[in-house]
Length: 477
Image 1 (cartoon, rainbow, N blue to C red):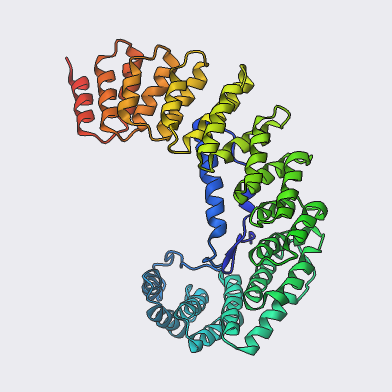
Image 2 (cartoon, one colour):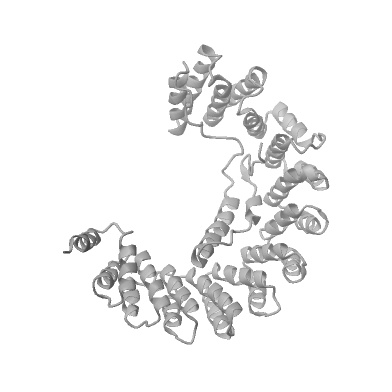
């Protein structure tokens, strides 16, 4: 089974370091990068999720005698009627033990009882999971059941159940031989460590440290999860452990996790370590992650370093681009003024144009501070290349510039490439004035190619006026 990234009650983030695909239009590429990277932080901060499955899959066996019951149970879970769901899934197992739905019905009964949440329900849920393990050891939800059982025992332990606490402790502490095909065991151990962390952080820390001391390849997924857990219950040792992992762990993904989570440790020592990685590491990916982590700390020291990295011609290109991007994600007049000033300092040439586009995009993500008007001024400045001016237009649209302002630019622009980009930006605007201008271009522009492009983009809009225009063109004698 593929390693789960979502732990019981918390979220792990190997995806945070997945490179963004470098294809498609630059605008799409930048937008995708922003969405992915901003969602990463939001996802990381959401501790309301669990590692076990929480939504029954669609019914798949129409002829099965338990099919209608399964559908009812699934619907009950989806609408939050967990008592009813628990009763229905219990009925499936009792009446149709040979049904295709029976193996997973015990899991869903346990899940529903867990959601009801009373002590008796939690203990009954554990019995259902134990029953599933004995009767249906190959059930699709068997590993989810193991993680759910750990979570339930963690809840019981927090309510004073000594037996549950002991079982969580043993599960977290056990040290089984590492096997590359034993991902499920890593998931269960991670869930146990998390439950123990919630119960007793002091006792959990030595176990997490023990896991992080491993160096074998097949324990990498467990070490990644341990790094995340460590970051969620910070102690006086947290920053030293994370810094040590960056230096000593042989797995690149573990190093990346450590760098990422150092961004959530708001201490001078962590900031200094991130600065060193961002400026001197021979590993460009780690340098980029350190830039991201510094941006998340949000300290004046971190912002100052990002500006130095963005401005220096000695900074590797990818690190420089990341610095520019993350400055744009920290909305402030200071950052807006800095980025505009940086744009003016960049020279000419293809490489400079790429950096200019990064600055434009970064400003497009920061509303206010006169950024919309400034972006339009760049679009009108013929001293810049058509590519840069076109990108400035798109950036202005992303920044929320009024459709009337975009429409007013069309007759002032002479370059064909910029006009084409402006037509597209007009089509992306939700303002009526932008649509009106597209209609005007489609009907009256002397350039046949511009009329065709305006018609194409108008065709993507659900506007009665557009339908009439297209109909008139098609029916014209």
